[in-house]
Length: 616
Image (cartoon, rainbow, N blue to C red):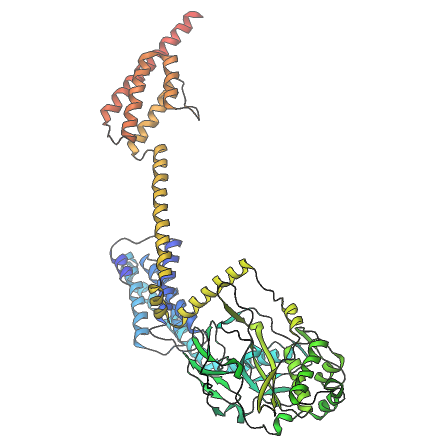
C-alpha cells in the first residue's frame, strides 16, 4: 500500500510489465499463505489453504496495478477480492484492507489527473461503478451462503450416490460403510497420503466394521461409540517406535498397527475394535507410535451372536463349499488358515470385479472363482468364517509397501487402501488378523515393482518435498523457523550465493566483451562511425569481416601513401586509448586528425583521377 501511494503521488508511475506483475502476485500469494499461520480462515467453498494465497495474489497485483495507474484493473482485482472474502466472517481488518485498496486506487486515478478533470459526471460514473460492484459482490456472497446447504445436499448427494452405483468410492481404508455391488472398480490412485518410518509394519488399521447385511458392511453404534484405553506395556517394556507423517487429510481415524501401546503428537481416543479416533486435521501432522508387534490385539470376551450373522441365502451357498475347504482343520485358527489358503491358491486379484450371476455376489465369487479385489475376498472370508461358527469382522486400513532404499521410509498411497478379516479365536481369547487377498496377483495388477537406485532417489526427493509442503501448509511460521535452523538449508543457500557470484562475474566478463565491440560513449561511437565511413567514401576501403585495424591500415598505406597511413594510425591509437585505456579523448584530438585525413584523401583521390585522365 505504501509503495502504491508513493508511486501514485510521486508524479511517476512504474511500467506495468509482466515480470513485475508476476513478482508482486507471487509475493502477495506467499504473504497470504503465511498469514494462514496467524489467522486461520473459516471453511467455505474455497479451501482455506487455497483461499489465503488467492486473496494475497489479488492484493499484490491490485496494488501494483494501482501504482501503475491502471485503475480499471485495480478495481477489477479489488472486486474479485471482495467476492473471495465474502464467505469469511466480516471483520474490521477485512473492511480496512478493502478500504485501503479503494483509497490507493482513487489516489492513483487522482494523481493521473482523471478525477480532477472528470467533473461531476465523471465522479458520478465512478460512484455508480463502485455501487454496482459492491451490490454484485453482496448479492454473490448472500446467494452462495444461502444456497450452500442446498448445493451440498443435492449435488453432493447425487455425486455420492453415483459413485456408490459405479463403484468409484472414497479410499477404502477410510470408509465406515463399504458396499458390495455386483459390479465395482477398485482404487488405483497413486496419490501419496502419508509416510511411515520405522517398523517393519505390514498393515495399519483404520476402521472396524462388524455388521453385515449381505449388501454392505457398517460399524454398529455399540462398537463405534465404545470407549477403551490403550493396553499398557508388557512385562519386558520393550517397544519399537513408528512414525507417521501425513501429507493429506485421512479423515477422523489415525491408522495404527495392532500392538500399539502409545501415541504422541496427535490427540486421540480409543474406540471399539481398538480404533484410534482423532478429531484433528492430520495433514502436516506427525504421529509417533510405540509398538509391541508380537503382542497383537488385546484379549477380550467372546463377542455376541451379531458377529455370526450372515444372510441365509449366502450361508446356504457357502456351507455347500465349506466342508471340503476346511476338511481336517480342528481348531478355529486351523479353519481360518485353511480358508485363507483357499483364496490364495485359487483366485486372481483384479480392479474390475463382475460378480453378477445366480445367487449372492459373494457366492458367485467363491463358486466360480472370479477375479475381484480385497473387499470381496475379505467379505467372502468373513462370511465363510461366520458360517463355520467363528466370529469375524471386517477391517479397513492400509498396506505398507517396502521402504525406500535411501530413506528407509515407506510412502502409503490411496492404492494401498486394503481390507482384511479379524477372527475371534477362542483358544487365544482375542481377534487375530487373516488376509484372503492373493498378494502376488495384486502386485501385478497394480504394477507394484521394487524401484532401483534412480527410482529410490526420485522417491526420496518427492517425499521430502511433500513433507516440506505439508508442514508449511499446517504451520507456515513454524516451518520457516525450522528451515532457518536447518544446516542443509544454509548449505544450499551458500551454494546459491556462490553460483550467483560466479554468474555475476560471468556477466561482467560478457559485458566487457560486449563493450569491446560496441562503445558505451555515444560521441565516441559516432566518431568511429564517421572514421569508417570516411575510409569507405574517400579511400574506397571497407573493413572485411575478419580484418583487424592494423591490416586495414596496411591496405591504406599501400593505396594512399605514408602520410595517410600516419594520420589514420594516430586516429586509431587515440580511439583505442579512449575506448580501452580509460583515457578520455577531447574533441580536438579526434576531429583535427580526422579533418586532415579527409583533406589528404580528397587530394589523393583528385590526383589519381587526374593521372587516369592524362593516361587516356
